[in-house]
Length: 414
Image 1 (cartoon, rainbow, N blue to C red):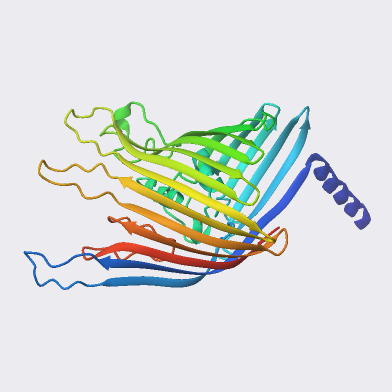
Image 2: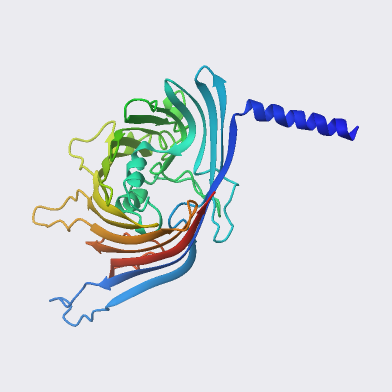
């Protein structure tokens, strides 16, 4: 009897295995000893009205931690493909962020990616939570892959520039998937071009806001960000052949709304990225502009324009050295706050920042690597971007200035 049950179980498993072409368990475990420091300075001095002012100098906040994802993002995932015949295939991808430094976050959430797809000669239709098209250029054309203290400033600044007006409440220990559509968007339908187009590639994505609509409209509750926030639409198209890879992307994320005021706030992002591999060196570059704008259904003729912009650029390089890789980048961003001032007033200078990062990766094998990265951010005119770690002390006396950091770690992929 027991032998019969075992045989039946084996046949059941074999049946599942034959129906499913492949299932893969994969992941990355990345840990680093990291340090961060953020220095603010008192830029005030004695004035005619306060001739005895004593400058307070500078104050620094610093932190040393055991971190994760300094080289590659730590993750654990499952992916599989079933051959449906006739060139069709169905697939799934479930990928969870993990915090291997403390074990607090694991497979309880697939916040990195959770999709199901149907693909064939027509391309691929993908449904679920995934990277936005506009984020791809930030990470593909960054020598540091938007990880660790080396992450370019375009990525760092846009992460907060496109935050939702009323973000979803965060559950302690888990990634908040409802605070921004910058890196990833939920509830999306995406289409990818087939890979046999002579180097041309592309994708489009639409993300549902999933808000409740009311009829008649006057029964809509007077609650901000309850009707359109969360919607995303975007696309990315590029060409990759030999040493060249270039792509352009555009996306629009609805970050807020007010039904009774008739306003909708959006962040529209446009970027272009490219890389060229000369062999001894590989060059990277990106330019980006994001615009935070508010549309009015009935805008007053004399209303002021409150739209703000964030412009940035990145240049980078990687240099293979034996079993290792040298990485370096310089990135810069500038905010256009579109300030409105009086006739005889002078607008404050717009905030801006730049960042330099240098690192080295030594590959012990195809799956295991040691790495080191150092980076420094210089802020001007009130910008407050950091490499990570503690925020600046920013008040009426101190102004954010420099942020420095380092990662020394190990990455293992499986």
